[in-house]
View 1 (cartoon, helix red, strand yellow):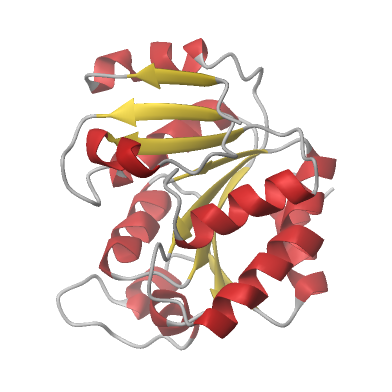
View 2 (view 1 turned 90 degrees about the vertical axis):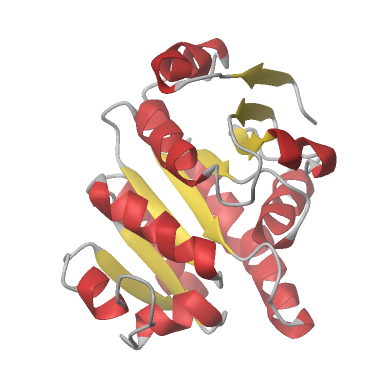
Length: 221
């Protein structure tokens, strides 16, 4: 259930806007990026089960916050559903443009409305919000599936020295990164891999994903 919505008009106001969400912090933070659409129904069901059984419970134990695109589609809807079904208490923050406010995922706890009119305009804002919420605590990006915008999401995370976990087996961008396949018109996946910040986990490896999240969000402790 959305408890607070804050609007921000420019980068200078972002720190104040994040503070107005009153999340308490610093705290470990997961940036969730990837497919709003484009997953097969079978993959979507697997991702939903993974969130409910593994991702959400792990994040709850860690006291983490989650930042994503906030709309009622794809991985964001799956995260919202998992948050609800597990009765999770960690903050789930959607970063959306004005266009995105027409289809908000209802189980998010907080919404931050940022400038922009097109899908993808939220990309640098989402990355910056995750950094501000973490405020020195560990943060990691989890990439599931994803199309053209996901390449930019990964680039924004790596530019901030944020590790990225690509969930291989979910298709498209995540699988391309997992196999280091170049994509014309984008920074290449092997360039991302050379950063040393990219790791991969199989969709079928629930225990492995839980370990990866714990290591990334608790400095390995």
